[in-house]
Length: 121
Image (cartoon, rainbow, N blue to C red; front, side):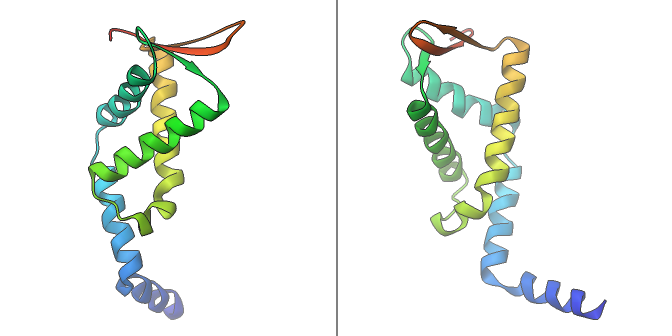
């Protein structure tokens, strides 16, 4: 049991862990509405008349752009971003799924591919 306490003490004293913990706290301070807004703003800018045509490449670019924007909003250093990426990405994906369920985003498919429509833009 003592080695666990010692290990935790060493980890907490590590500047990398402390920096990442501080960055995580700043990310946790962002509201769901702020995160959704970053993603929907990206879709609005990417699309025409509130409709964004999506592909694997566009989806990958959206993911990276949205993550970079959110990290920049709370001044997460580049060195800390990889360790925080998955949790933040999962949070944003869950929020976008909720937006689809509420009808704020509509996903449809036609012969040209998948498109995402942002309601009320």
